[in-house]
Image (tube, rainbow, N blue to C red):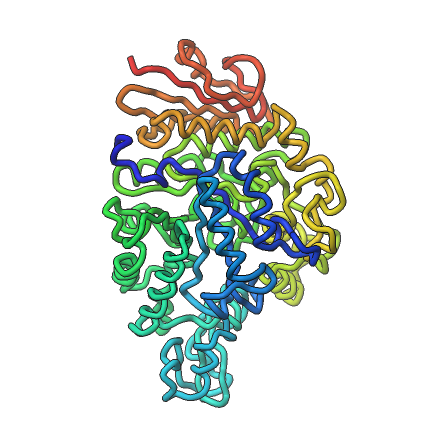
Length: 543
């Protein structure tokens, strides 16, 4: 690729903030924009280049802000529009770009468009949403919503159903209507003028749905819509854009992340994140991690998009459980396994995303009662499975493993009350382990998870092989070792990790005796037997 042809975001590391849980500035128990501003120096010290902020738009908060009632205003819970403008300015002063989270598949049912839409079939806004005629109690089809129940909601005054893929309070927009698309483009251009550095597009692969055919993702007009969206908005600036696409394959992702910039910079695909659930079942139906399958999945994406597109790299986000509790060891090997997972991910080609607290090795939480959980998806699943006769312990085991609230407990800043997150009562309880795991302690400790992330970020900015190198998976069928090389025109890098809590034989050490160790999560050298959760990166000139 070469440095001259590289886009800024191909060297960048992005940090995701879930604003409600990041930092509270006014004691109301909920994180806010001024809280984010107060922590910008922490983010600058970490070394990140951009911050993706989950939605802070005005919202009834039925789905924690992913139900937007006004795209061009800030929810009072988080502050004001002037706070947002200040955040953009202050971040820019520190060399950090702000990435807004856009939800373009649906709005809140409290959005003014929907208020108008339900007034009558002849209202100009009625066709902004997806409607079907029908009779009460007889749904247009048997499609289900992602959060449970039917995907259709009856409006008696209109004698029509509206379509919602998520909560009943999140009616889907009708992208077939060019007026809808124009409204969306004008709103995006408005934010671009305010200086935002990019957008993350929530469930964007679902905008071209065909509900009569049961099609939600990858509808026939999807890429037509996306190219128009990009042409009318993103291509008018130097932005980072990332689409959330649960149904993506490498072939589809080539279109999304084509180097010509016709759609997005990259996509979030989740194939690697569903390997620990039962085939064909819901995410709550747990299965042991198939490690060999994980390696081959990541290899497929690394090789499939090489020189054709661009990968996003992530283990965690606001919808996923904490990776150290999921595929690491959040007990005795918490620090070492958190570093191992970081090394494996950050050595690959793509743009890495760090979710708040991941750089500290924050863990899942185990609340003793379902009443302490706040996530709509978790609460709906608990109720539905209890009614279906599931054992409550089995349900809670699924909650402990996969609830979105695992990622949403407050950021652990220090060992003071409520982890320094708020002076009030937090909207969701803090993980009790904050006295041992917090940013203040880790910033002081040279061997902490935080300092390991700082070093990884610096390495990515120092060596071009991270951005440009070709990926090759080594030992593909080994059930303990994750090893791969990255190779560019003059450099070869090895990333080697023991993904288990047991010692593991590794035949690669002798072949790399002459290489420089870039980073290592254990003391000592690279031996023929790797210690539990050991990981290292090595570099040498090509022979």
